[in-house]
Structures are given as structure tokens and as C-alpha cells.
Amino acid sequence: MVNSTRNHFQCENLARGTALIVDPTLLPLHRDYIIVHKEGQSVPSLKQALFDEDQLYLKPVINGYNITLCTSDHKLLGVVVEYKKHLRKDISARGFNER
Image (cartoon, rainbow, N blue to C red):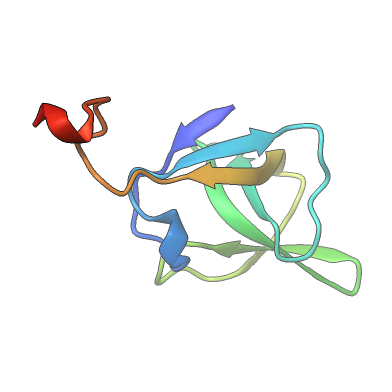
């Protein structure tokens, strides 16, 4: 699964336009980035998994939101295993001498 991020994230490397590669077969570990869908919401969100005393907490990557306890209302869709960020908007295949 690949998802392009849309918001400004606390993690500098996950800025707008970053493609996320998600493995839906993995279980999250402490501090993994995960894709979570909460019942009643229209789209899944990117969170950071935090474990404390066998409880999973979901830390938002968007500034200004609170850490929440993962409940039965949440469905874990996968763990982010890789991301790809283009450093330029123009990513065409032109060579150096073709400008």
C-alpha cells in the first residue's frame, strides 16, 4: 500500500508529498509509524505507536493533537516500513545535457 501524505507532520522527513509504504502484516513496535482507522472517520490517519505497560497509545504526527489510547474503535491497517520523498517537484527523466 502506498499513501501520499497530505499534512504538515512533526517528523521532518514525513512532509507533504512523501509516499508511505505500509506493510499490513506487521504488528507495531514502540515508536513505529502506523496507519489507523477510527470508527466513524472517513479516512485513516498516520500515528506513532507508543507502548506503556502493555497499552498501545496513538501519538498524532500532526502538531496540536493529543495522544490517545488505542481502543476497539481503532483498526490498525499497517506499519510504515519505508517512505520515499522527492526532493524536486519536476522529477522527469531528462538527462543533464538535455536542458
